[in-house]
Image (cartoon, rainbow, N blue to C red; front, side):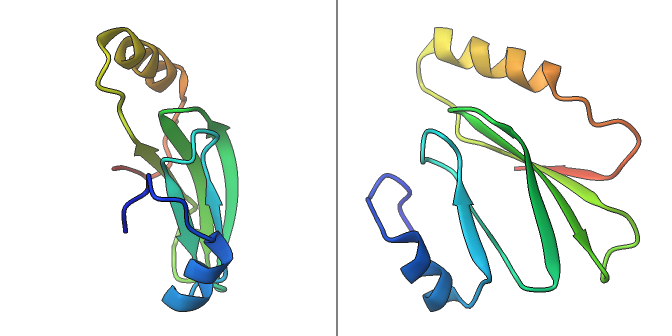
Length: 96
């Protein structure tokens, strides 16, 4: 799925069989989840989305950071600043 093409998020939720969808403020990152997962957005920036997940299938909550890096060097520096500001702590996380 090409994220730069305008699509109806709820249509994609139904088509892919997920519970819901959210996107970052730049609409370049879409995050879908299933009914057995609880999801909360922690950080929403133009180039990243930091999400907290909890499920009965996981032993611990999980943090996910999805990145859509800008090609512009200055904008990418802002992304690195944002990533440094995200505090993961001791919980498991996935960066994508």
